[in-house]
Image 1: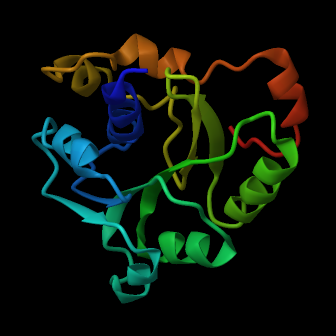
Image 2: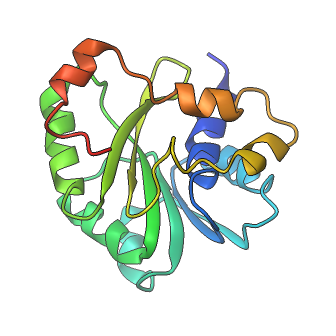
Amino acid sequence: MKKFIDSEMMIHVPLCTHKEPKNILIISDNGEDMANDVKKHDSIESAVVKANLDSLRDIEDKSFDVVVSQMGADAAVAAHINRILKDDGLMVSSHPDLDDTQANKTFMQILANYYKIIMPYNLGNGSTALLASKAYHPTADIILQRSDMLDNLSYYNCDIHIAAFAMPNYIRKNYLTIIKN
């Protein structure tokens, strides 16, 4: 599968959903591709790549608009991410396959303590991510002009953004009580 798909979808979906993203934290062992995708947004003042989740403890409260994580998360990590996100912040996290309903429901229930909107989406390469937002809905609040003005993308566009949130009925039924949209 094309490597650029994961990077583009993990970065551009949240950055084209948030109204005015300025600071983004990337938690990944291999975040260079994602950091390069962040540079395609003129409005971003800083992109920080952190590979160690323990380093979250040292980050100042409400210092990021968006957090993108490709590492596993538990209740403590979710609490730290919530703490470092601004009041209208959002986070994107890779997570277990949507067919692993119990593991996902547990993680989504943890996130429900902090976020108004929690929605899985397809990355386009056979895997999924989870978007959790304090304020912005990923399909209702997409910034179409921003998503259409991005240059040098191989996969992401505004149509892909919206389509990524379409889920088959069996997924919708399995997550009916936990997805918040």
